[in-house]
Picture 1 (tube, rainbow, N blue to C red):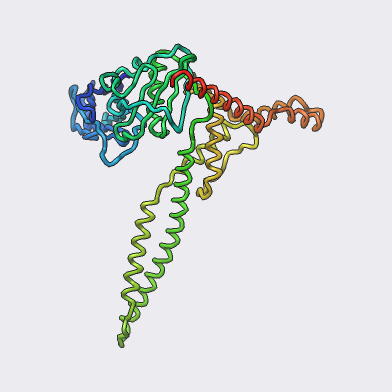
Picture 2 (cartoon, rainbow, N blue to C red; picture 1 turned 30 degrees about the vertical axis):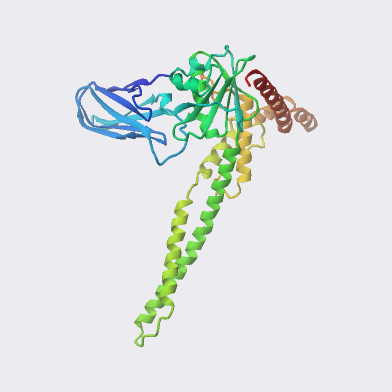
Length: 424
């Protein structure tokens, strides 16, 4: 995998490269800045996705007149025990030229050995993803040459099966198996988050060999995603309840304060038995509720749901009944949101490959269902009865989904039988 990228601007050229690993736990990233004219206030920022972090994360150059190299170490954060989802590191250079700010951006790819390590392959897995290729199967040792070595053979890896685990979470392993009779690869594991990087790396390395890759079988596993949706919606509902409770407690707290002030203003001081305790308890409850609200503030559903609905109402629409929403409301019931996610993934898997087409393709503002019905209204103008008869001939969405599910189930069963007989 390429670890060097050059980006050129009018006044500045930036080259980013990742040096070979000297320590399995860190990688040095070198950024070379070559100006064509004197620049002022150059700020270079290096950003890696957690649990990776760049140290230092930024470099400041007051003036830049000649080529300069700056470096940062990319390492794991001990506080984040989560799988790495991407090896890309973003490098952004901001500088001032002719009294205006300019931005230059580049991306570097970290070595795979920094994140993944060899482990024993596993026969049992909860989730499976099958990839079909157009070229003969490439041995796994050639696809992942940087991971081959003594440990490769010690843990039981071979050219047909390999086990990979994240260094940040060694307990989450992923197994890659090649097909014997068909040009296919199977990626299986117990965590979809751990499988994400392995699948993306496998696809990138196969496409680098001019091999077309497509998914086979049913929709990718969505159980962890739907479980996370349930958990997040539960937290959002809890926030609403806590905010209501906090409002009641603050109202009570202000009432106690007003009562206390009125007592202190009286000439004859009355005993304040129990008032100090009520005041302290109310203050403690307010603080606890505020902390709980802060801990449960995890809201991304209101951002994701309109995006999924927009896909279902434009490029993934199959019927005029799919309408775009005009307002974004707070998500209280996750059932509809989870259904939209599942339907969107089903339509993507049924109509596209692994990656979109290289050629730009515009999205028609008229949905497919509307185009069919528009053509029907233009062709059949003799009467409403003929138009209704034509519309009944259009395949319904339920029929298409039923046929697609039956084909997916049959393909998945054949894949399971083939891999079990050929590999294990």
